[in-house]
Length: 197
Image 1 (tube, rainbow, N blue to C red):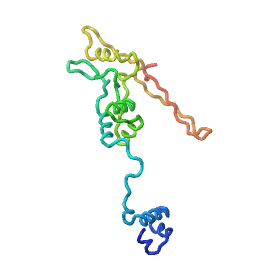
Image 2 (image 1 turned 90 degrees about the vertical axis):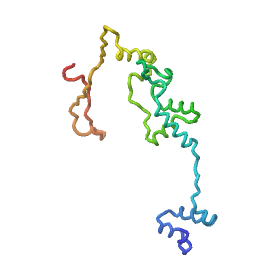
Image 3 (image 1 turned 180 degrees about the vertical axis):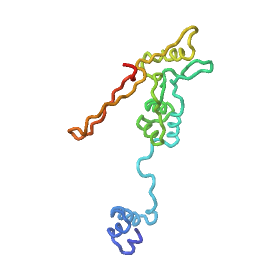
Image 4 (image 1 turned 120 degrees about the vertical axis):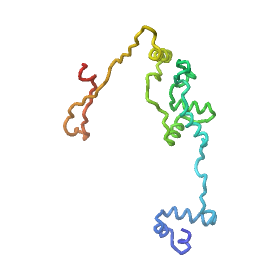
């Protein structure tokens, strides 16, 4: 840009020659006129500085890799226990933000989400009845699992599923398009299989 300007080209011609906007050409020429060669260096540190350092971001990501304090684990003697029964059984954005604040990192739920998404870290797990938030379930959970793992003598433990296997059935779709221009999709109905009614 500077060479072209020295050779006598005007700002519009320089912009066309370099394939950039006239505003960009004027910005760099003004910086060069004001500061000389140092004006062509990158200014750096523009914009808002990060509130959370890379080290703190790494600590937040490392929390996701730990076992939540409320998750049940097996003791060496064969019993289930949780490090903190009142703690979360699985990591959520709220519980991760609370754990980060407990470590001295001032961060909110949405910032935790952005950090994890930027690094491709998953914090969600598949849902299980063991991690239900029902008020009466937490005390029953160890007892229920204990029945499966250590059934009482001379007793048969039976697991009954209320619905059983569910099979989706399709119905023939209505022809063509709806009056408002949307494609009519085939409806699904769920049944318990051909042998069950």
